[in-house]
Structures are given as structure tokens and as C-alpha cells.
Length: 56
Image (tube, rainbow, N blue to C red; front, side, top):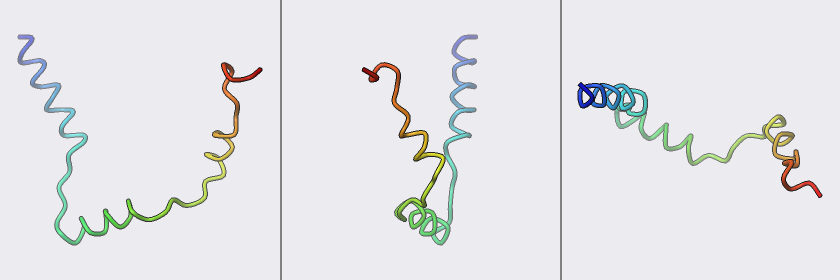
């Protein structure tokens, strides 16, 4: 029973992280990954916040 549950859980997780692309879509996907990130004001503000354990 445990083995079947583990196999099913693995199958569900693999379905969520694996996707297939044709050659053209693969090239487009790689180009998006290689492109520099766009400015993100919210992320910059979040990263500027000092974490409590580093505040002196």
C-alpha cells in the first residue's frame, strides 16, 4: 500500500514539473530563460528589507 502511494505521489509530482516542447517552442523557451530579467520594483523593495537577524 505504501509503495503504491509513493508511486502515485511521484507520478503526480512528475506531471507538474515535466513538459514537452517541439523544437521551435524549445528555442523560444531557452531565449526567454537567457534574456536578462525585467525591472521589478516590488522585488527590489523586498530585497532591500533587512532581515531581523542581521539588524544590529
